[in-house]
Image (cartoon, rainbow, N blue to C red; front, side):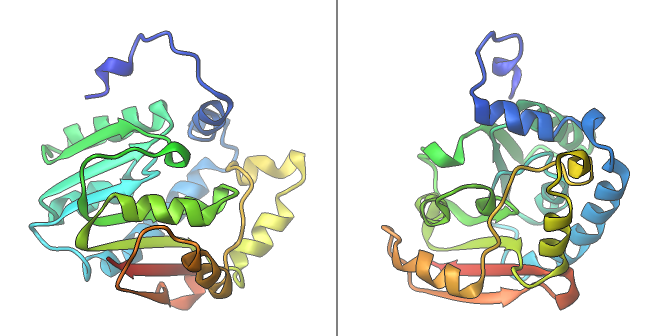
Length: 226
């Protein structure tokens, strides 16, 4: 499915280049620790998301990266779709899905900041995505655009009052960036989420702000019912 992008001499813009570098594991000085942490979080996130999906759900993950959580989620939904801006991450994701014998998946290069999606999904999910961009309200609205009426948008971000924020501050010096290779981010509080929701163009029924359990994992989760 990604063959159309291979061998295509298209210049990447600065944003694409930045995310390509972030997903290039050879550049990670802390890659193995990050992978262990990802597996731990995926266990708890899967347990949480299973309460919001069923075998008939069409599921979209925005900013899916290598889709390590999606690889597990695909076993519990009718169809899994992953969008990301980084081709190298999507290539790894597609390879892993094929090697696992899955067929109910698709991946595509999409820019969340300039989003166009004709299909609508039952659940639209992102993890650690919107905090990397300067207009989170616009990105929340993009999630809603891709969601069916009666569906759910679920967005997870690192909590403002958590060890994530302390680690982020400690790793800002350039020589420490290898210990956290992702782009700069905003730490979103519940109050900030409420302010963003007031700016949304799309209508919705209600929303809930919660935390991933156990709370020491330090993730805040916004659930919007459309």
